[in-house]
Length: 180
Length: 123
Image 1 (tube, rainbow over the protein chains, first blue to last red):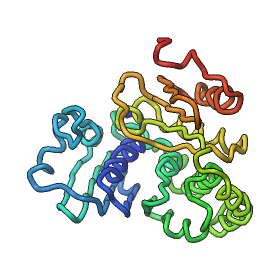
Image 2: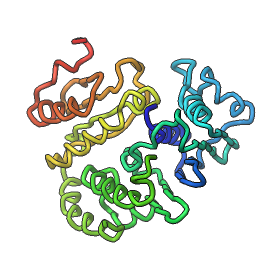
Image 3: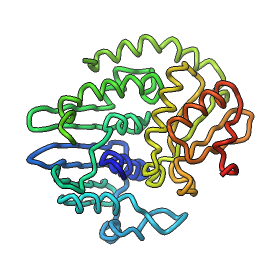
Image 4: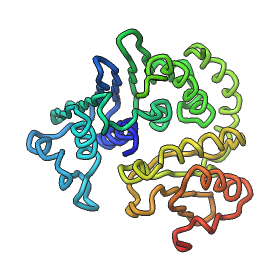
């Protein structure tokens, strides 16, 4: 993946497939690291399966026997001086955490966070996106946005284009111009 | 800077259109589906998806819906875009980039001509 935000998109799609109704994503810039957390209330995994998910030859897919999303993100974190962890509980949900040393030469750029957020605007799944650094925080809660929009759907083209520029403007002062 | 309260303006602008749409036949909707699994994302599906959305918005195409799907099983041909026009066979575009996405909207969705250069058989 060319951007850290593409890893986020990929892991979020796992949460969607795990039938999550609420997905909370936090992107934090702190003490020289980018910390990313994706937590969902989806079906979760049993203990034995969680142990194997960082292995590329582990997947829930039945069409083939490889699943690369989690191993790729783990590798991206570990080659960039960071850490990766995944916790899950059957019936409760899953939490993925990855950190990246900002000044590491092998760290991929954070990339287009606003575009990532608008790519996963689902009418029936809610998201809480938090982007923060030491001084500032932006929270994008789709439950709040949907209340304001009702009855206009959140995934309508016009809404999506508007929300993308809204998010872009609001996260610019937090993650813009810092070579992230 | 845009705020959450500004969203109300969008709602007011669009509410009338939405109500009109509800009266139209739901089967008349054209669907554009982008493969958004690990393979698609790594190959560039996200900018393709957003370009399609932007084109639909720019051209005010009210009966066109852009959405996502998982892996379509031809990972090396990603990003893959499927177009479902009511009453016509499904069209599958492969190795799509934002420029091709723009063409797909202009030629296929608006003008009704399939972009044969971007089909899988034309590789």
